[in-house]
Amino acid sequence: MVFLVNFARVVFAPLLEPLKAAFSVGDATVGLIATLAWLGSALPRIPTGYLLTRIPRHHVVLATGVVLTASAGFTAFSNSIAVLGAGAFLMGLASGAYFIAANPLVSELYPEAVGRAIGIHGTASQLAAVAAPLFVSWVLARVGTAGLELVGTDVTGWRLVLASIGVAAAVATAVLFVVARRTDLPDAGSADRALLAALRRQWPIIASGVAIIGATGFVWNGLFNFYPTYLQTKGIAPATARTMLTVLFAAGVPAFWFTGRLADRLPYVPLMLSILGGFVACLLALTAVGGLVGVVVVSVVLGYVIHSLFPALDTYLLDSLPDENRASAYAIYSGTMMVVQATGSSVVGTLTSAGFAFEFVFRSFAVGLVAILCVLLALHATDRLPTEAATS
Picture 1 (cartoon, helix red, strand yellow):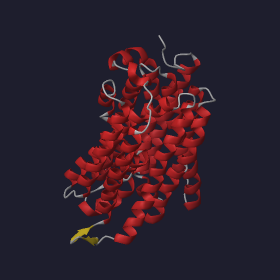
Picture 2: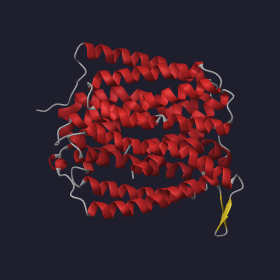
Picture 3: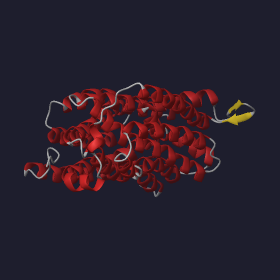
Picture 4: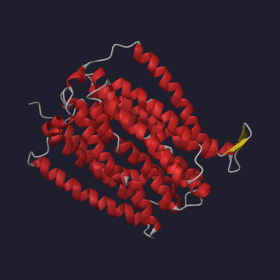
């Protein structure tokens, strides 16, 4: 399930160029499509947190499978850019609700090894990010621009990609329904019944999480959604540029796996701030390198570093938060930071359409992240950055 919901979010990155051609639009418009998918992933998170104070986590997870099945089918038959945007938003909606319900559930299934469990769950999610560009390239190579005739209808490559997500989601949801009925699920969240009370009690650690990931996620969202397009400006061929997006995501697979385990052993805050500094260094290096070898090396390191931040931060929150606040506080954190993240691709698309070079945009973002990192380091040095959640 986590593979499919993340696949539905990241699939628009390798589809941006085909969608530009299909609808005769520019970077700003397709950047908005990618933003709508991530905005859809952001907006339901706090409402889902409230919903989890009323119904079991696995019921919400099953509902997200139904939503993804329907929305992927709807998007596959889009006949205008407006309908496509609405479909992308709905596909993102499924992913946002899923993560708010599933991440606390995973942490509660394995309370003695939260980092390890989150790392495995994140690895499955990251495999989707690796598979998406490969699958899109494979479909486009076989279907081509003219389309494929199925049941008397010409189906273009991007439509077939989205329809495949809907079919796979339907199967996975049915399987999960059967498995959930046969499983004794934890009741650790039964005391989590007050969203606002969780906010009042846990706002320091929520604010810390948002400060660490909000701006970083914004930059990352804008970077990876335009990664193939950006690399083409460096003289790299389109097919190779899409492969580099796969490399970027593939480097994140071991990052989730190993950093989840590290987060069980190392102090949370120093680990996260070190990763943030590494991401800034990698971003600056990417704007400086030229040639395929340099791009490959930086892509591998960049992909590993940025994907290390997610399991570290999730473990920091989910392992620290008490049962009675876990899902509610996590929902508030996640919903807030995702709204910030979601606008990244739209801003990058707008800036580049206005004539700013990708290098200038990403270097400016790096300067902003350095300023944020300096503030966070100062807060940590003066013990003003919480190291764990409130327990009373």
